[in-house]
Length: 307
Image 1 (cartoon, rainbow, N blue to C red):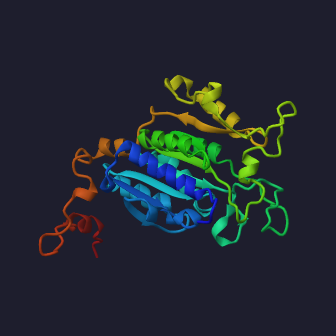
Image 2: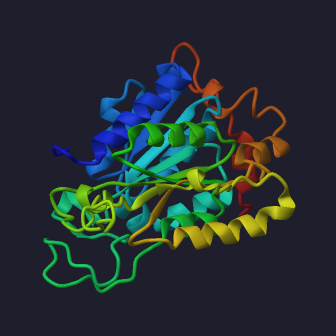
Image 3: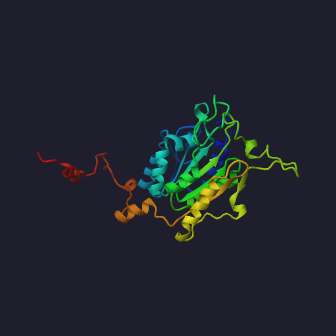
């Protein structure tokens, strides 16, 4: 990570959130994909798994379902999660596994010389691009909503305390939580810089002061919590409206939270009575000598083809 890279703010916010919740190191696991965010597990005192490009969600979901008592946090870049990993992003929303996914969103592929990432706006030309971006951008908040994520928020990497509070809410949420974190990339994104987010080019003619683009939705009375299933559609419509704000005003905070949707663990428990008491991670797979105790005779009989 480079000096002034937004990754540091996100890393600090994750560390602070876990410390605030007093989660023991052995009760949490951090998964990462490939990219600038990939080293995150290396700097947090918990179990950590550095996975494959675009595949962090399958790994993380598998661990959570195998051991429901773990607090699982997956992290990855916008290219990792919304480019090669976009299919897994949508599929994860359908399941609603009780875990948290954080995307480090700097609109470029920062590890591989600054190519346009899925979140870079159409027509933008960062310093590493020979010509302006030809593709329309992905709206991470809206995509998470229509995919089925039940907690959706956005933070800013230079407002670490606010981001820490958002991450804590995401981890404590019952269901699949998504946090989109806007962060400057001082190496390759020379448009969405720290100064740009601070509004250095937007000067109030009266006060002669910069007008920050980032604003907290809660300060303006926005409420994205679904308290009654009957208000879900109205809340979702407001999320779409807010998620399309960009340019001079960019909202951060909790866009949406709905705990009226069953988690994937609850759906499994409805079919397997002892799932919570004996999840896969607690089941014995070998005896003291290392010999397997798994009996697959029934499975083999089911698959047997008579000749």
